[in-house]
Amino acid sequence: MRDSDNWASTFYRSHTIGQIISNGEDMIGQEVTIAGYAESVRGRGGICFVMLRDGTGKIQAFLKRENLEDSTFEAIQSASRESTMVVTGKVAKKRPPKTPEGSPSPPPEYEVTVASGELLTTAHAPLPVGVIDDVNVGLDTRLDNRHLDLRRRHVNAMFILRSKVLQYGREHLIQEGFNEINSPKIIASASEGGTNLFPMMYFDTPAYLSQSPQLYKQLAVLGGLERVFEIGPAFRAEKHDTYRHLNEFVSFDIEAAWCDDEDVMGVLERMIHTIWKSVAEQDSHLIEIINEYRDSQDLDPVVVEVPKIPFPRISYDEAVKIVREGGGAIEWGDDIESHHCDLIAEKHPGFHFIPRWPMSMKPFYIHHKEQEKSADGGQLSRGFDLNYGRDEMTSGGQREHRFEVLENNLRSMGLDPNDFTFYTDGFRYGAPPHAGWGLGVARLLMVLTGAGNVREVVLFPRDRSRVTP
RNA sequence: GCCCCGAUGGUGUAGUGGCCUAUCAUGCAGCCCUGUCGAGGCUGCGACCCGGGUUCAAAUCCCGGUCGGGGCGCCA
Image (cartoon, rainbow, N blue to C red):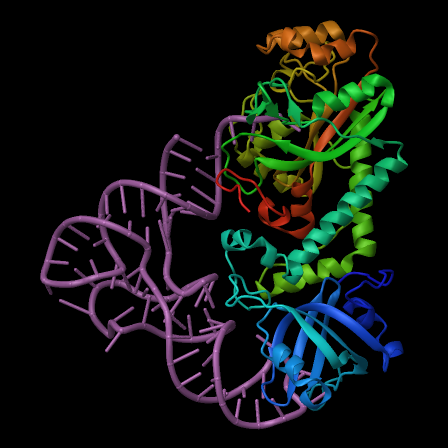
Protein backbone atom coordinates (compact mmCIF):
# COMPACT_ATOMS: atom_id res chain seq x y z
CA MET A 1 0.00 0.00 0.00
CA ARG A 2 2.83 2.37 0.75
CA ASP A 3 6.55 2.19 1.10
CA SER A 4 7.49 1.70 4.74
CA ASP A 5 10.98 0.28 4.31
CA ASN A 6 12.51 3.15 6.27
CA TRP A 7 10.09 3.12 9.14
CA ALA A 8 11.81 2.38 12.45
CA SER A 9 10.45 -0.27 14.76
CA THR A 10 8.25 0.98 17.59
CA PHE A 11 7.26 -0.16 21.05
CA TYR A 12 4.37 -2.09 19.55
CA ARG A 13 5.96 -3.69 16.53
CA SER A 14 9.30 -4.76 15.16
CA HIS A 15 8.17 -4.53 11.54
CA THR A 16 5.43 -3.04 9.46
CA ILE A 17 3.37 -5.48 7.46
CA GLY A 18 4.53 -3.70 4.33
CA GLN A 19 8.16 -4.49 5.20
CA ILE A 20 7.36 -8.19 5.46
CA ILE A 21 5.41 -8.22 2.21
CA SER A 22 8.17 -6.51 0.26
CA ASN A 23 11.07 -8.47 1.81
CA GLY A 24 9.30 -11.76 2.47
CA GLU A 25 11.75 -14.09 0.81
CA ASP A 26 14.68 -12.78 2.88
CA MET A 27 12.71 -12.80 6.11
CA ILE A 28 11.56 -16.41 6.14
CA GLY A 29 12.25 -17.86 9.57
CA GLN A 30 12.79 -14.44 11.14
CA GLU A 31 10.79 -13.62 14.25
CA VAL A 32 8.68 -10.48 13.93
CA THR A 33 6.14 -8.62 16.01
CA ILE A 34 3.39 -6.95 14.02
CA ALA A 35 0.28 -5.05 14.99
CA GLY A 36 -2.88 -4.22 13.14
CA TYR A 37 -6.61 -4.51 12.61
CA ALA A 38 -8.14 -7.95 12.20
CA GLU A 39 -9.80 -7.68 8.82
CA SER A 40 -11.23 -11.17 9.13
CA VAL A 41 -10.92 -13.97 11.65
CA ARG A 42 -11.66 -17.46 10.37
CA GLY A 43 -11.49 -20.90 11.91
CA ARG A 44 -13.21 -22.09 15.06
CA GLY A 45 -11.37 -25.29 15.92
CA GLY A 46 -7.71 -25.90 16.48
CA ILE A 47 -6.48 -23.44 13.91
CA CYS A 48 -7.30 -19.86 13.10
CA PHE A 49 -6.51 -17.42 10.29
CA VAL A 50 -6.41 -13.73 10.92
CA MET A 51 -6.04 -11.27 8.06
CA LEU A 52 -4.10 -8.53 9.81
CA ARG A 53 -3.91 -5.04 8.30
CA ASP A 54 -1.86 -2.01 9.23
CA GLY A 55 -1.37 1.22 7.30
CA THR A 56 1.18 -0.40 5.04
CA GLY A 57 -0.51 -3.58 3.90
CA LYS A 58 -2.07 -6.82 5.06
CA ILE A 59 -0.79 -10.26 5.86
CA GLN A 60 -2.23 -13.49 7.16
CA ALA A 61 -1.43 -14.52 10.71
CA PHE A 62 -1.72 -18.26 11.23
CA LEU A 63 -2.53 -19.55 14.70
CA LYS A 64 -2.43 -23.13 15.93
CA ARG A 65 -3.95 -23.80 19.31
CA GLU A 66 -1.08 -26.08 20.27
CA ASN A 67 1.48 -23.31 19.63
CA LEU A 68 -0.06 -20.70 21.92
CA GLU A 69 -1.36 -20.17 25.39
CA ASP A 70 -4.99 -21.19 25.44
CA SER A 71 -6.26 -17.81 26.66
CA THR A 72 -4.42 -15.97 23.88
CA PHE A 73 -5.71 -18.34 21.25
CA GLU A 74 -9.27 -18.03 22.50
CA ALA A 75 -9.11 -14.23 22.68
CA ILE A 76 -7.80 -13.81 19.16
CA GLN A 77 -9.98 -16.51 17.68
CA SER A 78 -13.14 -14.90 19.02
CA ALA A 79 -12.12 -11.33 18.12
CA SER A 80 -14.61 -9.34 16.08
CA ARG A 81 -13.66 -7.78 12.76
CA GLU A 82 -11.50 -4.63 13.03
CA SER A 83 -10.36 -5.49 16.56
CA THR A 84 -6.73 -4.55 17.04
CA MET A 85 -4.05 -6.99 18.08
CA VAL A 86 -0.34 -7.54 18.20
CA VAL A 87 1.20 -10.90 17.33
CA THR A 88 4.70 -12.33 17.39
CA GLY A 89 5.91 -15.20 15.29
CA LYS A 90 8.09 -16.35 12.46
CA VAL A 91 7.71 -15.31 8.85
CA ALA A 92 6.84 -18.26 6.64
CA LYS A 93 5.90 -18.81 3.04
CA LYS A 94 2.16 -19.16 2.75
CA ARG A 95 0.83 -22.37 1.28
CA PRO A 96 -0.24 -21.59 -2.26
CA PRO A 97 -3.98 -21.71 -2.93
CA LYS A 98 -5.46 -24.47 -5.01
CA THR A 99 -5.63 -23.22 -8.55
CA PRO A 100 -7.54 -24.76 -11.42
CA GLU A 101 -5.35 -27.01 -13.53
CA GLY A 102 -3.46 -25.23 -16.24
CA SER A 103 -3.71 -21.76 -14.71
CA PRO A 104 -0.42 -20.11 -13.71
CA SER A 105 0.61 -20.37 -10.07
CA PRO A 106 0.25 -17.08 -8.19
CA PRO A 107 3.28 -15.14 -6.89
CA PRO A 108 4.55 -16.32 -3.49
CA GLU A 109 2.89 -14.85 -0.43
CA TYR A 110 4.00 -14.77 3.17
CA GLU A 111 2.39 -15.18 6.54
CA VAL A 112 3.32 -15.08 10.20
CA THR A 113 3.10 -18.28 12.23
CA VAL A 114 2.01 -16.88 15.55
CA ALA A 115 3.72 -17.98 18.78
CA SER A 116 2.32 -15.33 21.06
CA GLY A 117 0.03 -12.36 20.84
CA GLU A 118 -2.38 -10.04 22.53
CA LEU A 119 -5.79 -8.69 21.71
CA LEU A 120 -5.46 -4.91 22.20
CA THR A 121 -8.98 -3.62 21.63
CA THR A 122 -12.24 -5.29 20.64
CA ALA A 123 -14.31 -3.71 17.90
CA HIS A 124 -18.03 -3.41 18.50
CA ALA A 125 -20.18 -5.34 16.07
CA PRO A 126 -21.77 -4.94 13.68
CA LEU A 127 -19.67 -2.30 11.97
CA PRO A 128 -21.70 0.67 10.70
CA VAL A 129 -19.61 0.54 7.53
CA GLY A 130 -17.95 -2.67 6.45
CA VAL A 131 -14.28 -2.19 5.64
CA ILE A 132 -14.04 -5.04 3.14
CA ASP A 133 -17.72 -5.71 2.50
CA ASP A 134 -18.84 -6.10 -1.04
CA VAL A 135 -21.65 -3.59 -0.68
CA ASN A 136 -21.80 -0.10 -2.06
CA VAL A 137 -22.26 2.23 0.92
CA GLY A 138 -23.86 5.65 0.48
CA LEU A 139 -21.61 8.69 0.81
CA ASP A 140 -23.59 10.13 3.69
CA THR A 141 -23.29 6.93 5.73
CA ARG A 142 -19.59 6.80 4.92
CA LEU A 143 -19.00 10.37 6.03
CA ASP A 144 -20.89 9.76 9.26
CA ASN A 145 -18.36 6.98 9.87
CA ARG A 146 -15.35 8.45 8.12
CA HIS A 147 -12.96 6.83 10.63
CA LEU A 148 -14.07 3.44 9.33
CA ASP A 149 -14.53 4.50 5.73
CA LEU A 150 -10.92 5.63 5.75
CA ARG A 151 -9.83 2.09 6.51
CA ARG A 152 -11.07 1.02 3.12
CA ARG A 153 -8.20 0.55 0.74
CA HIS A 154 -9.15 2.92 -2.03
CA VAL A 155 -10.24 5.67 0.36
CA ASN A 156 -6.94 5.37 2.21
CA ALA A 157 -5.11 5.51 -1.11
CA MET A 158 -6.88 8.73 -2.09
CA PHE A 159 -5.68 10.51 1.02
CA ILE A 160 -2.13 9.27 0.65
CA LEU A 161 -2.31 10.54 -2.91
CA ARG A 162 -3.57 13.88 -1.65
CA SER A 163 -0.51 14.17 0.56
CA LYS A 164 1.72 13.36 -2.41
CA VAL A 165 0.03 15.99 -4.58
CA LEU A 166 0.65 18.65 -1.95
CA GLN A 167 4.23 17.47 -1.53
CA TYR A 168 4.97 17.63 -5.26
CA GLY A 169 3.31 21.03 -5.55
CA ARG A 170 5.29 22.36 -2.60
CA GLU A 171 8.54 20.98 -3.92
CA HIS A 172 7.92 22.48 -7.32
CA LEU A 173 7.18 25.95 -5.98
CA ILE A 174 10.15 25.91 -3.62
CA GLN A 175 12.31 24.98 -6.57
CA GLU A 176 10.91 28.01 -8.41
CA GLY A 177 11.92 30.22 -5.50
CA PHE A 178 8.67 30.44 -3.54
CA ASN A 179 8.53 30.58 0.27
CA GLU A 180 5.69 29.16 2.32
CA ILE A 181 3.67 31.52 4.49
CA ASN A 182 0.58 31.38 6.70
CA SER A 183 -1.94 34.18 6.71
CA PRO A 184 -4.50 34.87 9.45
CA LYS A 185 -7.80 33.04 9.30
CA ILE A 186 -9.50 35.43 11.71
CA ILE A 187 -10.10 38.74 10.02
CA ALA A 188 -11.76 41.97 11.03
CA SER A 189 -13.76 43.00 7.98
CA ALA A 190 -15.46 41.57 4.97
CA SER A 191 -12.28 41.73 2.99
CA GLU A 192 -13.50 41.42 -0.56
CA GLY A 193 -17.20 41.90 -0.59
CA GLY A 194 -19.17 39.45 -2.66
CA THR A 195 -19.09 36.18 -0.84
CA ASN A 196 -20.71 35.70 2.55
CA LEU A 197 -18.44 35.30 5.55
CA PHE A 198 -18.94 33.31 8.72
CA PRO A 199 -19.18 35.79 11.57
CA MET A 200 -17.58 35.06 14.92
CA MET A 201 -16.65 36.87 18.10
CA TYR A 202 -13.01 37.69 18.64
CA PHE A 203 -13.22 38.39 22.37
CA ASP A 204 -15.48 41.46 22.35
CA THR A 205 -14.94 42.37 18.71
CA PRO A 206 -17.00 41.01 15.84
CA ALA A 207 -14.77 39.20 13.37
CA TYR A 208 -14.99 36.74 10.48
CA LEU A 209 -13.40 33.57 9.24
CA SER A 210 -11.18 34.30 6.27
CA GLN A 211 -12.64 33.61 2.83
CA SER A 212 -9.23 33.78 1.14
CA PRO A 213 -5.60 34.60 1.88
CA GLN A 214 -5.75 36.98 -1.10
CA LEU A 215 -5.09 40.35 0.51
CA TYR A 216 -2.57 39.00 2.99
CA LYS A 217 -0.45 37.12 0.50
CA GLN A 218 -0.30 40.33 -1.53
CA LEU A 219 0.84 42.25 1.54
CA ALA A 220 3.58 39.67 2.01
CA VAL A 221 4.75 40.27 -1.55
CA LEU A 222 4.53 44.04 -1.16
CA GLY A 223 6.61 43.58 1.96
CA GLY A 224 9.43 42.19 -0.11
CA LEU A 225 9.01 38.43 0.16
CA GLU A 226 8.79 38.38 -3.65
CA ARG A 227 7.36 34.88 -4.11
CA VAL A 228 5.10 33.26 -1.57
CA PHE A 229 2.68 30.37 -1.38
CA GLU A 230 0.20 29.17 1.18
CA ILE A 231 -1.75 25.95 1.58
CA GLY A 232 -4.52 26.69 4.02
CA PRO A 233 -8.23 26.71 4.76
CA ALA A 234 -10.76 29.18 3.43
CA PHE A 235 -14.31 29.61 4.66
CA ARG A 236 -17.36 30.70 2.71
CA ALA A 237 -20.86 30.97 4.06
CA GLU A 238 -22.55 30.27 0.74
CA LYS A 239 -25.61 28.05 0.71
CA HIS A 240 -24.53 26.07 -2.29
CA ASP A 241 -25.20 22.39 -2.57
CA THR A 242 -23.13 20.89 -5.36
CA TYR A 243 -20.54 18.21 -5.94
CA ARG A 244 -17.78 20.82 -6.12
CA HIS A 245 -18.49 23.33 -3.35
CA LEU A 246 -17.77 23.13 0.36
CA ASN A 247 -18.04 25.78 3.03
CA GLU A 248 -14.55 25.01 4.27
CA PHE A 249 -11.90 24.06 1.76
CA VAL A 250 -8.15 24.06 1.36
CA SER A 251 -6.82 26.62 -1.05
CA PHE A 252 -3.39 26.40 -2.63
CA ASP A 253 -2.32 29.99 -3.26
CA ILE A 254 0.68 31.73 -4.72
CA GLU A 255 1.62 35.38 -5.23
CA ALA A 256 4.72 36.66 -7.02
CA ALA A 257 6.29 40.08 -7.55
CA TRP A 258 7.39 41.42 -10.95
CA CYS A 259 4.99 39.07 -12.71
CA ASP A 260 1.96 39.46 -14.91
CA ASP A 261 -0.93 37.05 -15.35
CA GLU A 262 0.81 35.11 -18.10
CA ASP A 263 3.87 34.61 -15.86
CA VAL A 264 1.90 32.97 -13.05
CA MET A 265 -0.14 30.92 -15.50
CA GLY A 266 3.24 29.51 -16.43
CA VAL A 267 3.99 28.69 -12.80
CA LEU A 268 0.63 26.97 -12.50
CA GLU A 269 0.90 24.81 -15.59
CA ARG A 270 4.47 23.82 -14.74
CA MET A 271 3.38 22.88 -11.21
CA ILE A 272 0.45 20.80 -12.42
CA HIS A 273 2.68 19.17 -15.00
CA THR A 274 5.17 18.25 -12.27
CA ILE A 275 2.42 16.88 -10.02
CA TRP A 276 0.96 14.70 -12.76
CA LYS A 277 4.38 13.51 -13.89
CA SER A 278 5.45 12.65 -10.34
CA VAL A 279 2.24 10.79 -9.62
CA ALA A 280 2.57 8.86 -12.87
CA GLU A 281 6.15 7.93 -12.08
CA GLN A 282 5.97 7.27 -8.36
CA ASP A 283 2.42 6.61 -7.25
CA SER A 284 0.86 4.39 -9.88
CA HIS A 285 0.27 1.75 -7.17
CA LEU A 286 -2.18 4.18 -5.50
CA ILE A 287 -3.96 4.77 -8.79
CA GLU A 288 -4.16 1.00 -9.27
CA ILE A 289 -5.84 0.59 -5.89
CA ILE A 290 -8.36 3.25 -6.85
CA ASN A 291 -8.92 1.56 -10.19
CA GLU A 292 -9.46 -1.84 -8.60
CA TYR A 293 -12.28 -0.25 -6.66
CA ARG A 294 -13.60 1.58 -9.71
CA ASP A 295 -13.61 -1.69 -11.61
CA SER A 296 -15.71 -3.33 -8.90
CA GLN A 297 -18.22 -0.48 -9.30
CA ASP A 298 -18.22 -0.73 -13.11
CA LEU A 299 -16.56 2.68 -13.41
CA ASP A 300 -13.97 3.45 -16.05
CA PRO A 301 -10.42 3.45 -14.70
CA VAL A 302 -8.70 6.76 -14.11
CA VAL A 303 -5.66 7.37 -16.26
CA VAL A 304 -2.93 9.74 -15.13
CA GLU A 305 -2.16 11.32 -18.46
CA VAL A 306 0.59 13.92 -18.02
CA PRO A 307 -0.86 17.07 -19.60
CA LYS A 308 1.15 18.82 -22.31
CA ILE A 309 2.28 22.34 -21.54
CA PRO A 310 1.54 25.05 -22.33
CA PHE A 311 -2.17 24.51 -21.67
CA PRO A 312 -4.51 26.00 -24.26
CA ARG A 313 -5.49 29.63 -23.66
CA ILE A 314 -9.09 30.35 -24.57
CA SER A 315 -9.74 34.00 -23.90
CA TYR A 316 -13.05 35.05 -22.45
CA ASP A 317 -13.98 36.50 -25.85
CA GLU A 318 -13.26 33.17 -27.54
CA ALA A 319 -15.11 31.30 -24.82
CA VAL A 320 -18.20 33.42 -25.46
CA LYS A 321 -17.89 32.62 -29.15
CA ILE A 322 -17.63 28.87 -28.46
CA VAL A 323 -20.68 28.98 -26.21
CA ARG A 324 -22.69 30.79 -28.87
CA GLU A 325 -21.57 28.41 -31.60
CA GLY A 326 -22.63 25.54 -29.36
CA GLY A 327 -26.10 27.05 -29.07
CA GLY A 328 -25.70 28.59 -25.63
CA ALA A 329 -27.19 31.96 -24.78
CA ILE A 330 -24.59 34.31 -23.38
CA GLU A 331 -23.98 38.05 -23.56
CA TRP A 332 -20.54 39.60 -23.35
CA GLY A 333 -20.11 40.43 -19.69
CA ASP A 334 -22.13 37.46 -18.43
CA ASP A 335 -20.56 34.83 -16.25
CA ILE A 336 -19.66 31.60 -18.00
CA GLU A 337 -22.07 29.25 -16.28
CA SER A 338 -21.86 25.51 -15.73
CA HIS A 339 -23.81 24.56 -18.84
CA HIS A 340 -21.65 26.98 -20.85
CA CYS A 341 -18.57 25.22 -19.51
CA ASP A 342 -20.02 21.95 -20.83
CA LEU A 343 -19.96 23.43 -24.32
CA ILE A 344 -16.37 24.64 -23.94
CA ALA A 345 -15.32 21.32 -22.43
CA GLU A 346 -16.52 19.52 -25.55
CA LYS A 347 -13.74 21.28 -27.44
CA HIS A 348 -11.23 21.39 -24.59
CA PRO A 349 -11.79 18.40 -22.32
CA GLY A 350 -8.56 18.77 -20.32
CA PHE A 351 -6.85 21.69 -18.61
CA HIS A 352 -7.39 25.07 -20.26
CA PHE A 353 -6.93 28.65 -19.20
CA ILE A 354 -9.62 31.26 -19.70
CA PRO A 355 -7.76 34.60 -19.52
CA ARG A 356 -8.86 38.21 -20.05
CA TRP A 357 -12.24 38.31 -18.32
CA PRO A 358 -14.30 41.47 -18.38
CA MET A 359 -13.12 43.78 -15.62
CA SER A 360 -16.73 44.22 -14.52
CA MET A 361 -16.80 40.59 -13.39
CA LYS A 362 -13.55 40.60 -11.47
CA PRO A 363 -12.83 41.75 -7.93
CA PHE A 364 -11.36 45.16 -7.21
CA TYR A 365 -7.80 43.91 -6.79
CA ILE A 366 -7.51 42.59 -10.36
CA HIS A 367 -5.36 44.62 -12.72
CA HIS A 368 -6.53 45.98 -16.06
CA LYS A 369 -4.82 47.86 -18.86
CA GLU A 370 -6.94 50.74 -20.09
CA GLN A 371 -6.10 50.04 -23.74
CA GLU A 372 -7.21 46.38 -23.60
CA LYS A 373 -10.83 46.32 -24.72
CA SER A 374 -13.06 43.68 -26.26
CA ALA A 375 -14.27 44.07 -29.83
CA ASP A 376 -17.39 45.88 -28.63
CA GLY A 377 -15.47 48.12 -26.29
CA GLY A 378 -15.81 46.37 -22.92
CA GLN A 379 -12.90 46.78 -20.51
CA LEU A 380 -10.85 43.59 -20.22
CA SER A 381 -8.96 42.51 -17.13
CA ARG A 382 -5.88 40.47 -16.43
CA GLY A 383 -7.89 37.94 -14.48
CA PHE A 384 -7.95 34.29 -15.55
CA ASP A 385 -9.44 30.93 -14.63
CA LEU A 386 -8.02 27.48 -15.08
CA ASN A 387 -10.62 24.85 -15.88
CA TYR A 388 -10.47 21.11 -16.27
CA GLY A 389 -13.37 20.12 -18.46
CA ARG A 390 -16.39 21.89 -17.03
CA ASP A 391 -14.89 22.48 -13.62
CA GLU A 392 -13.04 25.53 -12.41
CA MET A 393 -9.78 24.63 -10.67
CA THR A 394 -8.13 27.99 -10.24
CA SER A 395 -8.89 31.64 -10.32
CA GLY A 396 -6.06 34.14 -10.55
CA GLY A 397 -4.65 37.17 -12.24
CA GLN A 398 -2.33 40.08 -12.24
CA ARG A 399 -3.13 42.35 -9.30
CA GLU A 400 -3.71 46.05 -9.33
CA HIS A 401 -0.59 47.69 -7.95
CA ARG A 402 -1.58 51.33 -8.56
CA PHE A 403 -2.87 52.85 -5.35
CA GLU A 404 -5.27 55.31 -6.99
CA VAL A 405 -6.72 52.71 -9.32
CA LEU A 406 -7.29 50.38 -6.37
CA GLU A 407 -9.27 53.04 -4.53
CA ASN A 408 -11.28 53.78 -7.66
CA ASN A 409 -12.01 50.09 -8.13
CA LEU A 410 -13.23 49.80 -4.57
CA ARG A 411 -15.55 52.75 -4.97
CA SER A 412 -16.90 51.61 -8.32
CA MET A 413 -17.70 48.20 -6.86
CA GLY A 414 -19.61 49.73 -4.00
CA LEU A 415 -16.97 49.18 -1.34
CA ASP A 416 -15.62 51.79 1.05
CA PRO A 417 -11.86 52.35 0.71
CA ASN A 418 -11.77 53.28 4.39
CA ASP A 419 -12.60 49.65 5.23
CA PHE A 420 -9.54 48.49 3.33
CA THR A 421 -6.79 50.74 4.61
CA PHE A 422 -5.05 47.74 6.19
CA TYR A 423 -4.67 46.56 2.62
CA THR A 424 -4.37 49.71 0.51
CA ASP A 425 -1.77 51.17 2.88
CA GLY A 426 0.51 48.44 1.59
CA PHE A 427 0.42 50.17 -1.80
CA ARG A 428 1.21 53.69 -0.62
CA TYR A 429 4.93 53.35 -0.40
CA GLY A 430 5.92 51.79 -3.68
CA ALA A 431 4.44 48.55 -4.99
CA PRO A 432 5.79 45.99 -7.43
CA PRO A 433 3.51 44.71 -10.18
CA HIS A 434 2.53 41.23 -9.07
CA ALA A 435 0.25 38.33 -9.85
CA GLY A 436 -0.98 35.10 -8.31
CA TRP A 437 -3.68 32.46 -8.15
CA GLY A 438 -5.64 30.23 -5.82
CA LEU A 439 -6.16 26.57 -6.60
CA GLY A 440 -8.79 24.31 -5.05
CA VAL A 441 -6.86 21.30 -3.79
CA ALA A 442 -9.89 19.04 -3.60
CA ARG A 443 -10.96 19.91 -7.13
CA LEU A 444 -7.55 18.95 -8.42
CA LEU A 445 -7.80 15.68 -6.49
CA MET A 446 -11.20 15.02 -8.04
CA VAL A 447 -9.58 15.11 -11.46
CA LEU A 448 -6.71 12.89 -10.41
CA THR A 449 -8.78 10.28 -8.58
CA GLY A 450 -11.91 10.40 -10.71
CA ALA A 451 -13.95 11.22 -7.61
CA GLY A 452 -17.34 12.57 -8.58
CA ASN A 453 -17.73 14.65 -5.44
CA VAL A 454 -15.30 16.86 -3.51
CA ARG A 455 -16.51 15.26 -0.31
CA GLU A 456 -14.76 12.06 -1.39
CA VAL A 457 -11.34 13.69 -1.22
CA VAL A 458 -11.85 15.85 1.87
CA LEU A 459 -11.33 14.05 5.17
CA PHE A 460 -14.12 15.69 7.14
CA PRO A 461 -16.04 17.87 4.70
CA ARG A 462 -18.03 20.84 5.87
CA ASP A 463 -21.07 21.54 3.78
CA ARG A 464 -24.36 23.28 4.29
CA SER A 465 -25.77 20.50 6.43
CA ARG A 466 -22.69 18.80 7.86
CA VAL A 467 -20.61 20.06 10.77
CA THR A 468 -19.82 16.66 12.29
CA PRO A 469 -17.78 14.59 12.55
C1' G B 1 -33.75 30.34 -2.95
C1' C B 2 -35.96 27.25 -7.24
C1' C B 3 -36.97 22.48 -9.88
C1' C B 4 -36.80 17.12 -9.89
C1' C B 5 -36.03 12.44 -7.31
C1' G B 6 -35.64 9.30 -3.14
C1' A B 7 -36.15 7.13 2.19
C1' U B 8 -37.27 -0.99 3.41
C1' G B 9 -32.80 -5.19 8.79
C1' G B 10 -26.09 -2.62 10.98
C1' U B 11 -24.89 -1.86 5.42
C1' G B 12 -26.55 -2.03 0.19
C1' U B 13 -31.04 -3.52 -2.13
C1' A B 14 -36.02 -6.21 -4.43
C1' G B 15 -40.91 -4.40 -4.17
C1' U B 16 -45.77 -0.31 -8.81
C1' G B 17 -52.98 -1.69 -3.65
C1' G B 18 -54.36 -8.15 -1.58
C1' C B 19 -49.46 -13.10 -3.93
C1' C B 20 -45.44 -9.27 2.05
C1' U B 21 -46.12 -12.78 9.33
C1' A B 22 -41.42 -8.47 2.88
C1' U B 23 -36.53 -10.49 -1.64
C1' C B 24 -31.43 -11.02 -2.17
C1' A B 25 -26.47 -9.91 -0.76
C1' U B 26 -23.45 -8.54 3.10
C1' G B 27 -23.31 -8.51 8.40
C1' C B 28 -24.24 -10.62 13.24
C1' A B 29 -25.00 -15.24 16.54
C1' G B 30 -24.27 -20.42 16.70
C1' C B 31 -22.94 -25.24 14.72
C1' C B 32 -20.10 -28.51 11.18
C1' C B 33 -15.50 -28.86 8.48
C1' U B 34 -10.65 -27.17 8.51
C1' G B 35 -4.14 -24.76 6.06
C1' U B 36 -8.52 -21.64 4.88
C1' C B 37 -7.51 -18.36 0.02
C1' G B 38 -13.34 -13.44 -1.77
C1' A B 39 -12.87 -20.63 2.09
C1' G B 40 -17.16 -23.81 2.20
C1' G B 41 -21.80 -26.11 4.36
C1' C B 42 -26.05 -25.73 7.81
C1' U B 43 -29.36 -23.10 11.38
C1' G B 44 -30.95 -18.70 13.37
C1' C B 45 -31.27 -12.96 14.14
C1' G B 46 -32.46 -8.40 12.18
C1' A B 47 -36.18 -3.55 8.46
C1' C B 48 -41.00 -0.75 5.55
C1' C B 49 -38.34 7.65 8.10
C1' C B 50 -42.27 10.46 11.19
C1' G B 51 -47.45 12.31 11.47
C1' G B 52 -52.18 12.54 9.19
C1' G B 53 -55.59 10.82 5.25
C1' U B 54 -57.96 7.52 1.19
C1' U B 55 -59.40 2.17 1.09
C1' C B 56 -62.70 -3.80 2.99
C1' A B 57 -57.18 -3.86 2.41
C1' A B 58 -51.18 0.62 2.16
C1' A B 59 -44.01 -0.68 2.08
C1' U B 60 -47.04 0.57 -2.32
C1' C B 61 -51.92 5.98 -3.34
C1' C B 62 -52.65 11.38 -1.28
C1' C B 63 -51.13 15.59 2.15
C1' G B 64 -47.60 17.66 5.65
C1' G B 65 -42.85 17.18 8.09
C1' U B 66 -37.77 15.47 8.57
C1' C B 67 -33.50 13.67 6.30
C1' G B 68 -30.81 12.49 1.88
C1' G B 69 -29.56 12.61 -3.60
C1' G B 70 -29.41 15.17 -8.48
C1' G B 71 -29.76 19.74 -11.35
C1' C B 72 -29.84 25.09 -11.31
C1' G B 73 -28.98 29.57 -8.94
C1' C B 74 -25.91 31.92 -5.62
C1' C B 75 -20.48 31.82 -5.26
C1' A B 76 -12.76 35.27 -6.23
